[in-house]
Image (tube, rainbow, N blue to C red; front, side, top):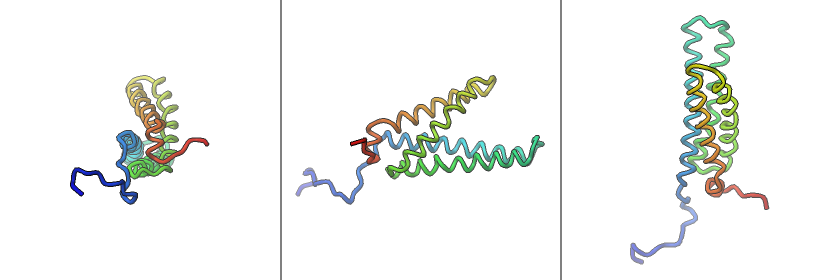
Amino acid sequence: MSSTEQTPADPAVPAPRPVRVTAAAAVSGLEALALMAGGVHLLVTSLTGRPDGLTQALTGGATLIALGLIPLVAARGLLRCRSWSRGPAIITHLMALPVAWTLLRASGAAVPAGIALAVVAVTGLALLLHPATTTALGIRGRA
């Protein structure tokens, strides 16, 4: 058999990951990094500054870091084309929409942050709900 002839698909070799799935993983990873960075920032500023409530600030920072683990694990699963990873990623993007709405209704630097968050959340949802992504992750529709 020459190198120009095509060999049958080897079932042991996984199909290449579609660009949409890779992009969805990147968006989920971006959300994870933003949540974790916000948590670390809250922890550092609560320890170095004078927060109104130290316990509340520390709990908030730890919560943001813990919440950042959800899209991080989902992004890793998406990179490996695991079907279970789509659910946590979708939930994270859905949870970001009310936060973006709240930021958009604020003033100052919160408005551009709200716009950026809304764009990231809607982009992530569009990538995850696209039929090509569903097919690539092996998720079947209703029979």
